[in-house]
Length: 171
Image (cartoon, rainbow, N blue to C red; front, side, top):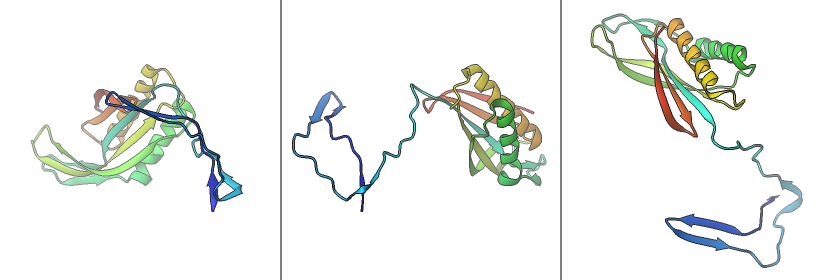
């Protein structure tokens, strides 16, 4: 059984005004095979809060009656487009994708549409200027709206996972 390195130092917790602490003072023992000790799996941690974005985009085009005219695929169509744009923007294709279903109401007919859609999640790991990063996300949303014939693509800008602004992007 592999062992795992741990910090046996003091441990402090504060919750609801109550503070707890634990300081080990006994002899330390190695449990498991010391020759195969595992390193802490954390490879990096951001300094301060990190900016990120979620882009919501449909993958189907419908007529005014809600009939599907055309469908696009996440892997075949969306991922290559985002990858190409991210490389052009920052030299790094980093993005995550979540396939999902979406509901929305057509502005011209009022019909409710249920369609295949996706989220594109991008972290500002390179720490580019926040306004530049937002511009990059809006550019991706506009390209998605144009390519997939969407009336609207939604961009949610986040800081530390908390929504800071929501932007509607048209083709």
